[in-house]
Length: 303
Image (cartoon, rainbow, N blue to C red):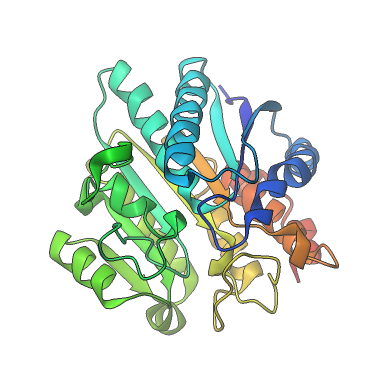
């Protein structure tokens, strides 16, 4: 039976370079709802979790928000729905995937895989971060890596062998050393260019789904080249082609073992012509609807 998709907003930018990411869910959720309806999916507008934009105690606030998000995601899964979290900056991943793991645990399932599509590794800890920004740390939290346990953000809900990064091209030595030490598979952008995005995404899904009870996909919009997605918090040149990524996601999307989807770091302020929002919606539709979506509509919308 087809699951109802619940669109959940993580409306904060406290962990990112630009707090304007907090405005993304209010803009993207209605567009995503309409697009999912068009491809035959059943969608529901769920809660939008937010805070004061001038919150000073950022770590404490993000910890609290991630706790609320984890509860919303777990509730969605317990009700038989497919949660789709729309951020916000990438610090929300600490809530999304903790919530998924909690719901799996309730069913006696303990193993979660994760595909992380991103220009960055997001694998810093407070001691290694060059900026102190929390959106550069969530993958480390999810892997149980944290040298400052004060705020309880390190959940350790995924095992390194079940995680794969795709499209990476901007990172610091400390992150690279951490992921290499843990044995996390990283498909850098130069490898994507040589092998193709279809092969990279297929390998990533294979890693995340092999030996696990379920898997999730986290998409940072900055994985796409800035020429196609200028409306992001931290753009990096030389990224993925948006239409190719959407087609690759459509090939593997909509599967029964997909536990949740997340899309983050859309920055409306920099998306003057709306092209970044349109692409974000198509990536969501591709991953959630899979082969059911209209390929012609997709090509016309993204290219």
